[in-house]
Amino acid sequence: MNPSDLDFGYTWPWTHGHLVLAALLGALSLLVWARTRSRWGAGALAAGAIWMLAGFLIVRYVFAANAPLPPPPGAFLQSPGGRVLDLGSGSGRAALMVLSNRPGTTVVALDNWSAGYIDANGPARLMANLRVARVDHRAEVRDGDMRALPFDASSFDAIVSTYAIAHLDEQGIRQALAEARRVLRPGGQLLVLVMNHDLWVTAAYGPLYGLHGRRTTPSYWRAQLVGAGFRVIEEGTSPGTAYFLGGG
Image (cartoon, rainbow, N blue to C red; front, top):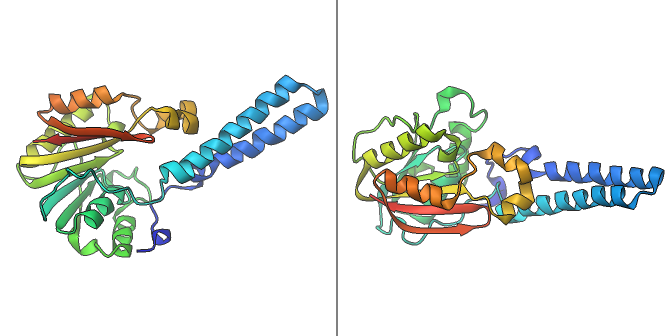
């Protein structure tokens, strides 16, 4: 698989927007210095430009939004096979993570495609990415709302949701986790990845972080999983991300 052939749909404002702001702030810094000789004004704008450059490097090389997700935790679905539900699958980063690292699995990729707000991140882009990785034959695409899943009880061995559930409101989060618990087989696992408001996110996005979902803490998500009937098997963090592995 050539990672450069994958397209997860993150457009230039997310991947290179920091550079535009850095150039703007840098130009303003030079202008202020040339006209006023104000060290404070020019220095503040120059510091902002440096901050934006740092944000670009974090998004590009630390978060790597347009790259495949790293392998799931080692405790996730250790059996040689299993049917996995990907909640809010988008352009397929989570589905690709599971299928590439758990060769015996099949994945049902579910998203609310018919709602229209997903834009170009539809089934075609998802399946194109899976074809690049040569795992598309183990995937199925379904349309549905994670708050009211179109599946029978105990239908899946495992469930993953990456950076999706956090976009719901308080009630929606509870509904989605309750539905996940319903369709998970006894002894199954739920893996949830959410953005973590850590120093990396603060450095990269500052106040804009709130646009990507709920500004909540790991303790909040731990309590939500427990409240939905899951026991937390494992949890951890990586730059910008908190993950929780729950057992049914």
